[in-house]
Length: 128
Image (cartoon, rainbow, N blue to C red; front, side, top):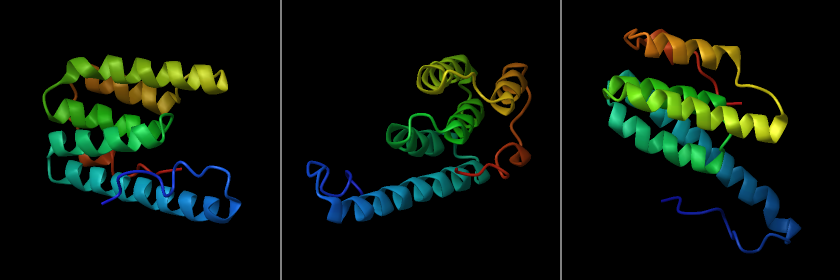
């Protein structure tokens, strides 16, 4: 039902900025919870779809990128993991002049080494 930000073209009306941000944040949190539920049920492809929507709204969300790497591994597409990681790393480097979080690097390495994704990899993820 959420197709775009509330009154997205009316960027300069202060009266609606708070409501727009509230709705956007609610949508992002919803997508994050649904993605984790998708991983809980082993549905990697469903999770990938939702996480990509989340990333389109918040491109530097590391926890979303970690969920995307896990979902890619679950769906049998480990070859996407380096691309996901590199895209995130470029974004945080450009935006904040820092590298990806060590937790993200460790997850990437674990998944690329062939480790099977298990619930402990995503259950403690939080959206900041």
